[in-house]
Amino acid sequence: MRGPEFNTYSLVGRCARTRELGACVASAVPAVGAICLVLQPKVGIASTQSWVNPYLARDALDRMASGATAQNALDEVLADDDAQDFRQIGVIGTQGRAAAFTGTNCTDWFGQRTGAHYAVQGNMLTGPGTLDAMVTAFEGTTDLPLEERLMRALEGAQRAGGDKRGRQSAALLIANEEAYPRVDLRVDEHGEPISELRRVLTVSTAQLAPFVAGMPRRGGIAAPPDQAVVDMLLKPPPNRPGGGGNRTP
Image 1: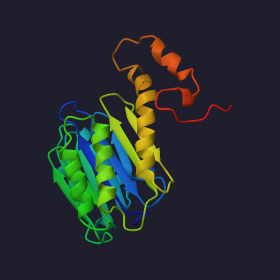
Image 2 (image 1 turned 120 degrees about the vertical axis):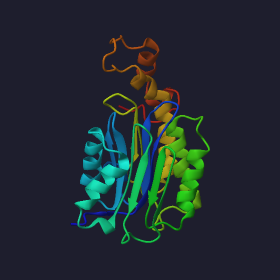
Image 3 (image 1 turned 30 degrees about the vertical axis):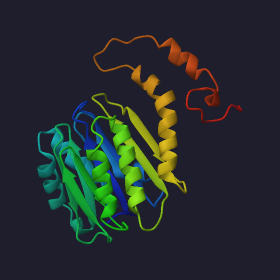
Image 4 (image 1 turned 180 degrees about the horizontal axis):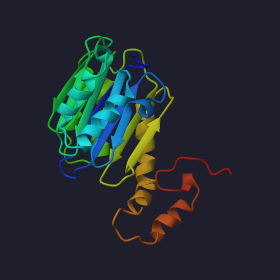
């Protein structure tokens, strides 16, 4: 079976400095991040799109957890998919070796790019410039935090054309070695989802990131909450750094 069609553009990548994994995605369908992005901590991250088969991503990551390379894992799971010509997927592991696949029956324009520490893929795009802009942004920002690199990749893609149907949702996911994501942000239905995701990221970086940084780490020593973070979060949202939210109960 083909499954629902998510015509979209995405990037799965790894930061060589921090060894974090991340992914970003945008589409003219609602809640793209919930459907397309799949993470297995300490193993890899994937984006499965076009006529979505979520098991391709999950099964590929399971094989990578058992030692398979991203390419071998992808080859193996696609071999068992009788509708592989309608699929598109990118996957990357903790070592930074990425793989991608784009079926010949994806909706035009479709294509993919792979390089050191990333895979970029998209379908139903205005043209190849969308993916080229993502590559340029990601490759040219290696000194920045991974979430900023991925955010700029989405912004570059949108300026270059994006999804030819329009805009509706976008998402950003970052993971380190913990079992929970460091960043997990989604704009599920919006007329300017990438601009809104940028705004949410700005607020989250100021208000949520300090809280997540103090959360327990596997094997670490649990520490009491940072008082500065406690004091910040006791304030109404508009009074915190970055603002946002509402002070009305």
